[in-house]
Image 1 (cartoon, rainbow, N blue to C red):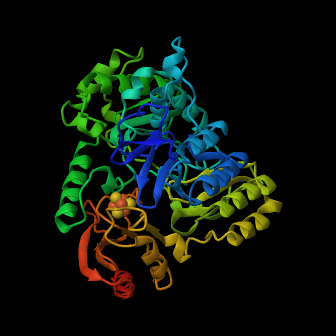
Image 2 (image 1 turned 120 degrees about the vertical axis):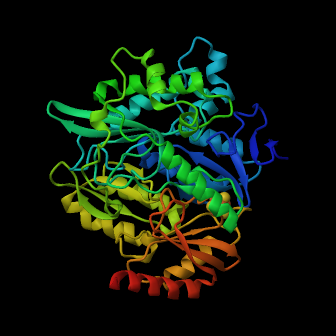
Image 3 (image 1 turned 135 degrees about the horizontal axis):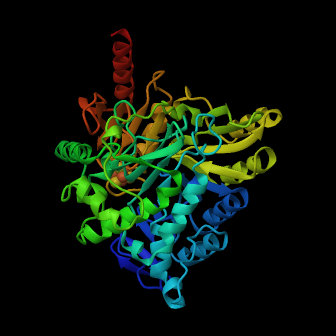
Length: 504
Ligand code: SF4
């Protein structure tokens, strides 16, 4: 008999515990039901996973779930297909491997160890850094110690348990391998000043780099798939871009944690209970008022500095560096990366990656926000073997490989909202995909798989049928250029469009 109870229409938790927190987002303790079984999300600090932890995840996913391990666009892992009755055992094995949150320091032992407290500490662990942080030759500062400090801060104050599981921070160290096009509630970006590195910061957006990247539709939509829904997504996305603040001021690296704390308390002081994201708060209060409120929590002067209003990131980000071999800051060391088909690993692949990390790297893996895997700290002599190993496991190491140019959400095999089997259709499209074309297949307008607007989006309209959107600078998926295409028709249309783009 199952030891689980149905806590909400979509959430199951261990029987012994109260519902950790009411949320539809999967977490380590909050296994959310999907069409293909439960989903358990494992948050990785800075995207890092040790080889030993990878083996635990691989074994546990085979023993307690369907053996499918997904990389997410927040550089986390999630185990899919968790079997009914296996949830508590899966959670226990993952927590024992050190994959859970850090217990909060409190005099109230009962509070710190309660399921709700642990679940809340898990939920707030949302700090994004480059998978090459500390190693990228273009980085102005190593953000890994700052990231660790912020994660400790987020988990350490009981009040922060009230934050939404989606509330997220970005720490950009100036790396070339960087994901800077996914809006975050608070973002920091390293910049050089005459007397050292500073962090500029902003709210509800991303570090501006020329044109700030397209927003993720899933951030703003909870709508069924339809043309009308897409219009709603576009409107909501547009609103978000209006709300984003740009760079507000610059602070010392040593002031980042204090400012985060001040902004989180400000958010919780001012946000009504149903307000979950910074962009919502910015719709109610102007940014100067928020900074004025935050001033009471920090000892350094805090106000908008017009000097930074036009600040732009100086180094172009290049996600292609996630694949293949690239030199690190320390001479003679490299990181090597590969893209598993549609961001999914099986237990054997994860075991294989753990072995590669131990044989050729530093014994750790990095999940990336592009649903790929990076092996850091490989010496030059071991590089050929590491790349051969990634290829042998079925990971694409060449950005030109079709698998590296396709992303797809769970689709109808895993999600009841999907109008098509996006995963299977994407694999069919891989064999037909024209060169230099990147495509996102989405089962509905929520766009779960993409943290950015892809050049082309196939939005499911019916099983095996898609509407094709082309990115054109407008928010959302862009312009709809064709309706109800089969995969073969979509491949032909993509070929035609990419040729006309090239000829233009
Ligand atoms: S984008 Fe895909 S996975 Fe996300 S809700 Fe829609 S159909 Fe489901």
